[in-house]
Image (tube, rainbow, N blue to C red; front, side):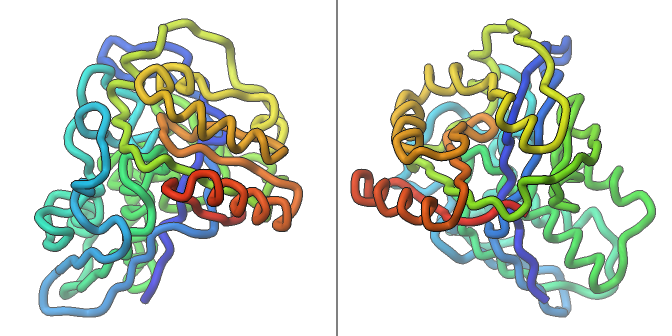
Length: 305
């Protein structure tokens, strides 16, 4: 069995308030790309996890990191707390192998399944990148279990215990998220099939410090309407604090803006930025232009689900 862990984007992210528990009240538009990490599963005597792919090596020793760890939730981390967060839950232990305390292992442990499963995770998405990689991986585990054995009636509660955005990642459908991102509502998805380009400067950016740098000012609710209405008229309130910590994000946004997209914005708490295009030709031309100017940046061309 194979499942794609669809890369999660926040097409809009409005931070409304800082809560007493250190987390934040959010309004966000969740979207998912057709591409992401890939999980394969086979029956086995015991649960087992192998991690391969470009981002299999733990913490990418050659990858600069800003902040301390990343939490679970909207930005590939969470809606806080605003000080520090636990280590990235989507990272395997030593050398990219083993069955440690990461979200794939925790998702598998959270669900009843007869016998064991040997899972291979092809880690194609950068970590601590604003793409919800660990939560997307956990969501793919839920879908693997669903296909093989079915899900328990309380699967949403089990998913929420893993992270605020894991329920959204299980279904991987366009949705509005409120609260810390766990209160989901469907909406008209008039952006399905829209070409999208993701760009990351290969800098891991932790969620906690970005939320901590938010100025606390409520800039108003997210617009209403279909997905395109919200995306085009919304904003990401974490862009400014993320740029204050990781200035190269501004360069990524400028590079995307120069390709004349429908929309260019940072996803989650960064540092990945995305751009939406009218057609695949414009998207592919944009990717070639950015690759020529910044060959070291990570890129992924896809379409929205």
